[in-house]
Amino acid sequence: MSDHKHEHGHEHGEACGCGHDHDHEHEEFVLTLTNEQGEDVEMVLVETFDVGEKLYALLLERENPEADGIILRMEEEDEEMVLYNIEDEAEWKAVEEAYNELLAKQE
Image (tube, rainbow, N blue to C red; front, top):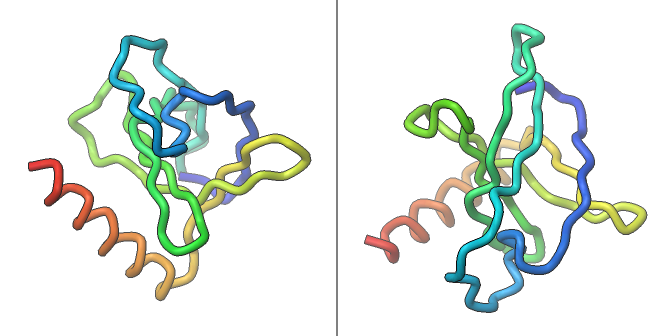
């Protein structure tokens, strides 16, 4: 995906990572990212998780949920949640390890 930051609002209950149980039905949280070919791709936020003091989001393609997802760092700026690519190798390794542990717990 691109190096552009993508801003979107965030409300409690939209896979917000707040630690509360949100097992009830709710709308998909969909945002549009631009891929390397310059094409817009609708992505669905399916999971958030913490690594240390930082929050990360797992996004899957809305039209192709079987495709590899992407993980982006979420940061709050001016009361908006902004998504960033993970460019630091050490940060990526920590996030990948945490995500794999999360998957193992869900199985």
